[in-house]
Image 1 (tube, one colour):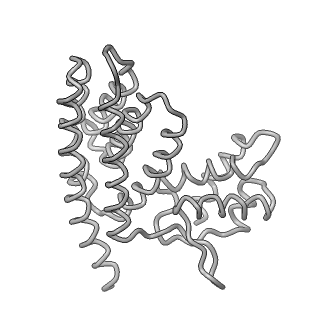
Image 2 (cartoon, rainbow, N blue to C red; image 1 turned 180 degrees about the horizontal axis):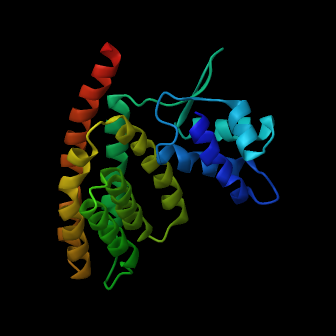
Length: 233
C-alpha cells in the first residue's frame, strides 16, 4: 500500500485549489482502473486522505460515488474495499457493452467519420504488443472501445461507459495471463477500423458483435478459473 500511496500523492496537483469529491473520485477511478489498487484491496482513509491532502468527509463522499459506480464496496466494521466482480457481473458488463457499442456503430450516419482517436488506439495497441507489454495492450484495447463510443458525440454515453470500462478493468486485473486475454483482439481492432474507414458500418457492427461475444467467452472462462483458484487458496 505504501507504494500506491506514494504514486497517489503525485496526483494531488490534479485537485487544484478546490478539493471536490468528484475530482478525488476521478483520481481514484483512474488509479483503480490502472491496477494501482487491485480487487480486494482495503482503501485506507488516513493513507489516501493524507496522500491527496483532502478531508475525511471529502474522501468519504468520493468513496460513496465510486461505490455507486460499483467499483468499491463498503463492508460493515471492516472498511471500504475495491470490489471483486462475480462472473455474473462480467456477463452483465458485456451485455451493456454489446447494447451500447453496437448501437453507436449502427447509428453513425454517413461517412466520413472522425476516426483519429480510434486509429490512435489501434496504433497504441500495436506498439504495446511489439514491446511485449501485455498490460499496456489491455489498456489500449479499452481505449479503442472508449474511442468507438466517443464517435456518438454524447457526453452521457461517454460517462456511462467510462464506469463500465472501469468495472471491466477490475476483471482484467484478476487474470494472470494478460497476453492470452488481449492479444487475439489486436488484429480485430484493425479490422473494425478498416471497415469504418471504408464506410462499411454494417461490416463494422458485425465484426464488433462477434468480437464482444468471443471476448465474453474468453474472459468468463479465464475469470471463473482464476477466481476459483483464489477461493481455494
